[in-house]
Image 1 (tube, rainbow, N blue to C red):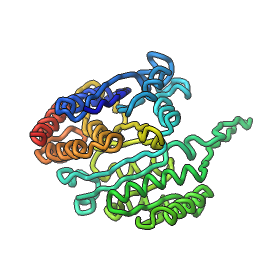
Image 2: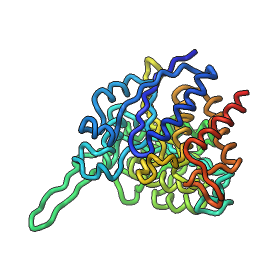
Image 3: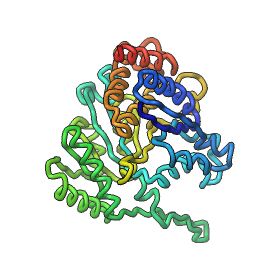
Length: 370
């Protein structure tokens, strides 16, 4: 039996609740003999700040580097709104991404048939929706230098953020997108703002070159980021894989998320390079949703995105396609039976809590495994 070392970072708000339910799914697959999971846990975000006065400890970072993969719940909340900037909860997540070189963020937007009426768009526009946004995660304006606020005197200040991309950063994210498209519907849409940004000019140029050299069999389209945002709410099913930079990826993936009905439904993966020797790649998996402090501790959170993130881990880190498919099928079956947490209630008369939804998913997994 394959041994898999996991690091769980529950984080803040509803993070610990949805992580606890996901551990039940991990235990299910271990009992099924899919793999032996060795699990460690540590703190990140506000919880780490309360314990260590930093968003992630050096010991937790060591565990992250040693793990085969990382599952993270959620970080942040109003409790830590006034902590030092470098110690804010989100800094823990940013450090994990940067230090582990997790440059590729995969955010699927899938509309389950049972939830098509809960989307903000008409059913015919979203039913059957299955797209993936591949976002460059460690470059661009979030990490570029200089990043300053300068006092100009007389009550005036100047803020500077810097958008920076090198060729190699664009090449590697483009390869991830093209590789993924080959396993799907063989189409990539690259998005930037080459009409007003020099980084966009380089982005389009490099993506086109990678396509010409290595992926001519994949269909490539280019779409300006603002136009793409419009197209996502006009006709989202025209897309397959969308590749874009850190800033536009952050925005467009949230737009795509709401096409599905709820942020509580969507998992994500953050991937690094494949190690030439071990053939493994460092990876972190997390729900798209935030920490939802308003419902934390009440047993109301939707666990589907966290469980789905574990499914993505099985698929992308360990090649366990059968088990990943089982998770997606179990989620779809539970939803088809009418189970809803509050965030996806729609017209349902009754909602279930975090544990009840997981119970239903585990029950469907049992049937699939029989």
